[in-house]
Image 1: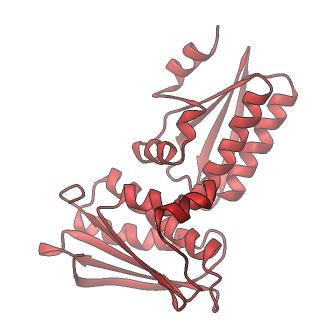
Image 2: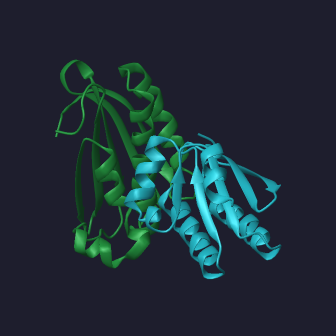
Length: 140
Length: 116
């Protein structure tokens, strides 16, 4: 996973419907700075929305908040890295478990398909979804 | 991206076209469902959703769209989509929506394919 080279902003948002729109706007501003194409911005936006919804719907967060960190990363800052974190009870990110959740459990599959890199850490202390989108190339 | 969704309908002979503008989330999906069920109740069996004005559809919105498709098929109707962004097309595929509904590149080709 690419390291952050320049911090682009941090947001703490309530786990309420549509709060994800704020995160999309913030990431969109940084995406413009690194020259992400319109299609890639759209893909990143959908991934952020799904990560926030995942936190809202499945985390059972103790503080009712989701944290979003946005940073430039990669050589010359040619990528954007987004971390979506919550303090919930965690979930099993394995594909079999997600399938069991039915239609409402496909957010992570969407994120995987739309971002170039993704890692998910989830446990009793909470969940971190780390995602990277490169300006100049497709997924590695 | 905006939080709200505007929906309008063009009722034509044999087909109703639903235009969306804005974010299709839970609330937006419910608004499309309300409009679609109203059209089905009034006798329409061919529904086309033109999403040219929508840039983001979340997974909850997609679940609601699948419910509308299932209900439409159940009463012998057909629902199609047109004018999707490439990303929305990709998410529809991931969510399995393309198994139940046809996707057309634009409104003209959709209307031609869906009306006799």
